[in-house]
Image (cartoon, rainbow over all chains, first blue to last red; front, side, top):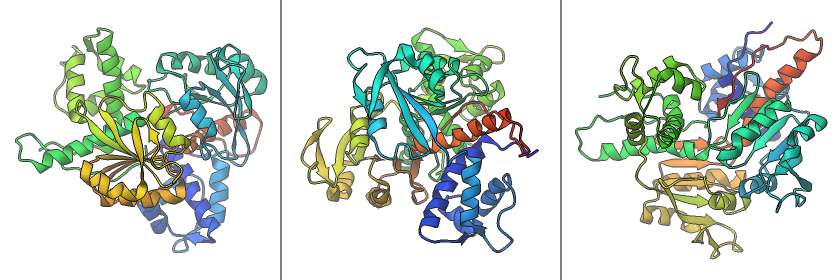
Length: 228
Length: 228
């Protein structure tokens, strides 16, 4: 049995796959951990360590075979098949998610959308009829929906998440800025641009502070950009 | 001089502040690291370690003073003042960001929007006139815009990011699914829901695999939900 892979490594894999796909498209056949590290703004050692969880790739001094590594990561991530999604909340944000090309790719397919507003229920969105959110649990069970996208207001988000969990959804992408609770075994990812902004102002503030003489302790650290 | 604070800690602070604000609003005056840890799905030890970077809070067995800790974190994060934003890209995604309440709060103010499409330039969006993207660098310099939000297609994103950097922007929130390059000293955060989805399917796939008898190695790890 393989060693358990840390979640932080799993979270980096989509970006690895993304880069490898781009390299393959332009005809690059092999790539070294140094070049891959530079593209991903990390060290060659980190690249080698991350990839070592998934078997032996590349030979000393030879670099990785782009196509082989991409296939392996695609398999590891469970891509290359279609996952079914449901969207809950069809306000401005939800509508933008549905209509924005590039939100998902061919591996993901939105098969149901829900709202609680009677002005919206019954209308069409992205080719789907908006259903009443009271039908959420039954629909998720019947249609085997695997991933829920939560785009409702913060005050309603936990209730929707609980419904998804009860109906068997094991992966939830939550846009509401709450600290959502899910039981162990359920994956939850937050998309909270406000928090990303707030973590950047820490560095901006530190820069401003260091421009003027002050007796306050200064933080000199200037981190490189990082994945959110 | 204080010890440099790891970026991973900085990235957690907005959620700490978010929780503390909610606690303060409902009248909670003090809270223990155990309770705070439960709310943030982390350990009391992690909470104590994270907060120890910013000075002494709370006494053994007494818990943290909610109001005092919130004030401190607000200061550390550089919040409680207004930061100016520019949005580049006013397609569906950009428009949704502008129009979606809750995308930003009072600490952030959108003061300019840009597009390259002549169908859009000159129109109004969120009370602002959409400017030609060729004016980006000059406007950012003149108006001292501090943070750029990039919502253009992937093929144009790096060019826009380079413009922002040249004009002095030190923090960029990028929605395009690219591995963007920024020089040291410039903060970059990615909002890439597709990658969040792809990192969750890893776990879903592992669950499916473990339901059927197989000779393939199984990964048994079921990570708790985590911040993206």
